[in-house]
Image 1 (cartoon, rainbow, N blue to C red):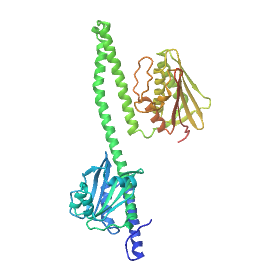
Image 2: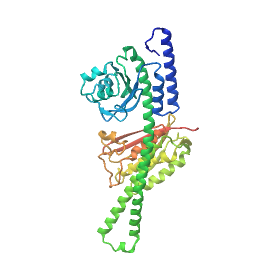
Image 3: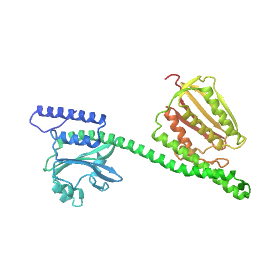
Image 4: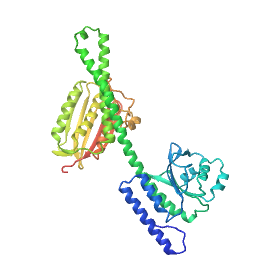
Length: 421
């Protein structure tokens, strides 16, 4: 680590280097220990003044095209330019710092204010007693996210030889900011998940009441006396209520996978029994549209392997359900299972409508519907394939597809074969 510090002797430089290295190690320790963002910044402010000159340190981050002050500590009486202040990034001199990655030194803020009378932040800094400043960019994931200001109540405080030191400090602050963002995003994710779960619950409750009354009505004697038009209204209401119920269930599952389903609950699964159960249900589903179904298992399948049976069952059921929805009557669907290269391969092959190649990218996106519609008006949320993709990737596998309009589609995925854990 290199460090440039003013001083008459090499011993002072070495001492400053030693202090700086120790300080950075302490900051890294605090980060890994999970200390709060502001606590680490306060520690930095209290510790750096033996190494570099400053009377105030501030951090501003980019939010919606504005540069917003997030944190500030000062040895000077101040309060005009602190947390809560924001200004447009476009047209400001700070934009160049973020674009070039080069620090900026202003050693005579009074003169700078006369040259830039339109700068509101400069006016406020002068009111706070600031006479010189050095500004460095800070980054998160390689992209500029804001700036850190080192400010002094004296003019001519900052020299070009200070820049390397301040950039190293800015790099450390970039890491602190990145960790804080990750922590806040995790908290926000948990909050969002809870809100979605509560919303889905609030929607399911009245929907359940509606479904219940519709069922009760159809069991009443007066229902049989209704004319066909009235009965069709009830049937339409009931069909749409069931569709809504299925959609809410899929949204709940997607919410769980997005925020809580990072790890599959794997256990040892007997493959013959597992796929036989899936085939029985698929046969029943396909027969309702006079579609033939066949399960084909390769002779190389292991007897048992580890995966999450509920999730993989869900993934295959989604693929088979789609195959039935988008296939015409008197066609066929095959579920083909093979093992090769230490991988379990699953293919769902249909003779359905097929999908235009230009619409392939939509398929595994959330709510990514194509122009192709189910053959008999079945419901389609656009969520099912996104759920399949998340489940497969949780198992360390991959999903793919091929399709030809008018001939059908093949949806395939593989997951690792693990005979032991």
